[in-house]
Image (tube, rainbow, N blue to C red; front, side):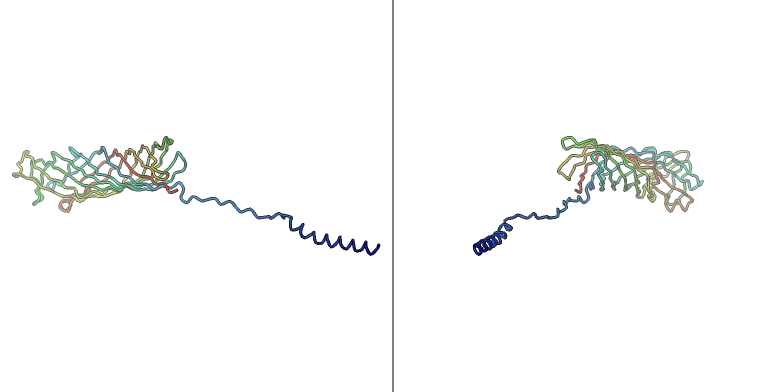
Length: 286
């Protein structure tokens, strides 16, 4: 009986030892994996944009253009405002880059170039001067037709308020300030003699050229327009700009006049304004 009990106990222990690994294998042990950090894409250059524009001045508002004449006989000056003056400008082109702060505010820096030409007339400037003897014809008066071309480069910082987007169209208003470098080419002056107490030479016409001047001037502008969505990143910008450029020098005396004693400048402008229509593209760097 004791032997049978021992055999039974040994069989039970052996059976349990064989069952234990199988049960352990059936258990799903928890696996702890460290949670990976969430990857958030970074927008490189978000808010920045590039722009390019073409502008056309529908009207120009020239200020006063002044000139001086020099009497080589008496060594005195005369002159004043041109009797007539006109300023024509050609197409302008510009580029720039900017940043959109939010849906309402943005700013950019622009550089643009435009050119134009001046034409004017003078009358009653005593006396006419001989181009060969540098002497005045006493008792005569002298009128002239003057012309000069110029090139202007404007650098400006601008701020805008976008007034909300409606079906892909965003109206805006803005203002800017900066400087303009104005470079005048040589001024051509064709003089015509008029009889007075003295007589003019027959068919007297003399053409004189005065070297142009260049200088940097203050400029400011006001803008308004609409931007139209073409795609997510591209907009067409159609707008109006009023730009005013401060006055400066136009021409100095030539070598002949300087040798005769003339000093200072021969012609100046008191600034001018343009009313422009602009068409451009804005590409947002998202």
